[in-house]
View 1 (cartoon, rainbow, N blue to C red):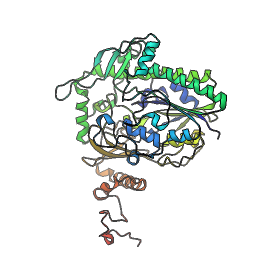
View 2: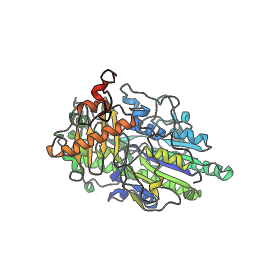
View 3: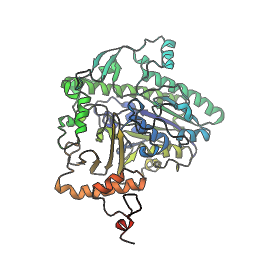
Length: 500
């Protein structure tokens, strides 16, 4: 395959069910729905971990979080690394070495001291976890175009357990659409495409451009047109809003209190969901501007296009907001679309794939050996529509956000297992209970399923080198072990393999 241009469209904290391509009836994502129809839609696309920095570092390196060790967002870091170790492989540097133009417009959030330029990216430096509305380049954009600066009203927030004001969840933005940070990002992306296209025509230099929106991450701050786009009365509340947390880890109830769900009336919750969908619609509009520019510049037939996000968002599901130590589908299953020139349109795949797999795919599209992306597998064989042998399940991990909280998850065709060392484990039958309301881990009739999944997760973690498996060795029925789990070397006969 010749070296492809690559456009990588990424959002932040994006629920899969906001897209029409994944079943949303509102009709607010025509551009992304069209992209799905023209390429491959992945219906079981998962994030390796539902938190920004670790998932973005996994995309950059092709390594699972436990391996690259960038395990938390620096704003609330609890002692983990804040930058990738020196010498870590990244796709961006590999692309640079192969002669690509490499650009990043938008959210970075993949290190504290190191910026995108340290990894070979062109583009304005835009640090932070949400729209940096005080960034010099954005302020210059507003001034150049005679646009008003950021101002908000109609704030939506609840009340914290200690009586203080809750986190800002949404607000009305007093700027026209052309002044929004989303419009600014799309404009800068189009400018990069124009420069890259000109150089490609001049000397054949291929490009990789990542447009990374900070939204629809909360708080949802939108101008009138999108703040009021979706009628709250048309919003169907998630079925998991009846969550009781019975038989589940207590941390979930604590997080619900932190995110103040029960302190707001149901009308506020409906409005929040409506505004969130409006935020997705605004981003869809801006993606459309970028794809139109690709057409105008004659790049569409030469450029592979990805669309995905770093992780999902609760938005009221399970009486939660944001993300956190609860490995529900709402934040782990995400949208994933890939259009490759020359591959068939309208392909739908149900294999378990991961954001991690984008790294090897990017490298293969560029004609680069994907082997250094050790936890990644190219998606290109799936975009052909052919039968492909693939993994029957997916492993995800979490390490904490406001505090250390290690979890591991195994998801297969029907069941999900979550191991919580501090508390009760979770097992969900997603065929009978798609909203994950009933934890059946302790049900006697589920013991065969539970034990099989524990053994499978244990085996996969050992194969990957994820030391979380050591906890499982002594706590669960993981089967025979052929090593000394004390790691002392003093009791080898006790743990000798039955075959020796």
